[in-house]
Amino acid sequence: MNPSSLKSRFTTRFLRALTKINAHKPISSSSPGPGEIFQRYRRIKVAADKSMAYSVRSRRTWSRATLWRLRTRSPRSRLATHARRSWVKTRSTRAASHGKEKKEDGGTVEAEELRELVPGGEAMDLCNLLDETAHYIKCLTTQLDILDRQECTSREL
Amino acid sequence: MSSRRSRSRQSSGSRITDDQIIDLVSKLQQLIPELRGRRSDKVSASKVLQETCNYIRNLHRQVDGLSDRLSQLLASTDTDSDQAAVIRSLLME
Image 1 (cartoon, chains in turn purple, green):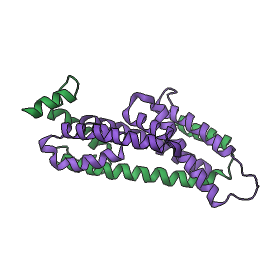
Image 2: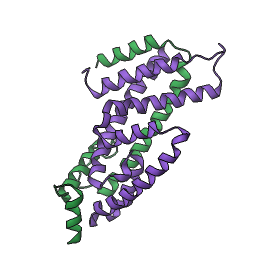
Image 3: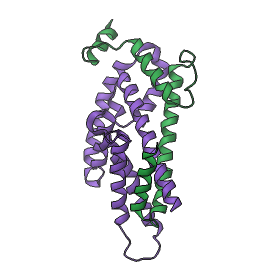
Image 4: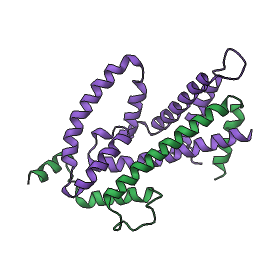
């Protein structure tokens, strides 16, 4: 495996994060309650997204948007999220009206849907959206591959 | 006329042509298992975008499911040997 590939960068970061998560041992040594498992599930999900976004760094709009979203997750920054959303809405109305090709009128509804699925998509014009989506999908499948392998090995042990 | 002007303005120098969009859409089509084999002139851009949305939602669901299952499994395993095993399986490909 190429050590500088996206896959290996993601794997290293993600496994490191998993070790930290696993180090959070409960105070009582009895089996973890559902609340704790849910916490761990949240942490693993965040670790997977964070590791992927960091591995891509700021080279992509979607990874920048993900990192931004992860950094402003705390309740205190809900104000910042609202501010950002209104800024994005202004940009996206401009971008959407520019990127709309006449023949894509049928595809514009789907493009809006896609914009909601791809991080940072709301502010992308159609061209960038398509390009970012392709990269995003490649990264998601890589992420899934590693998660899957981790699950398989965890089951075997 | 105004649409041509606005198109060149928002793409910072290079104009976004219909061909570029078609190109990007067909590139996207190749990534989606549902549509991969089909000829790009047989699949509408609208369909590609639709299937892309479904595919991404599917991938998100899978990540969610795996994270969930991992959270239950990790409690009882030794992560060091886990990691060695994951890395080993990656090196073998």
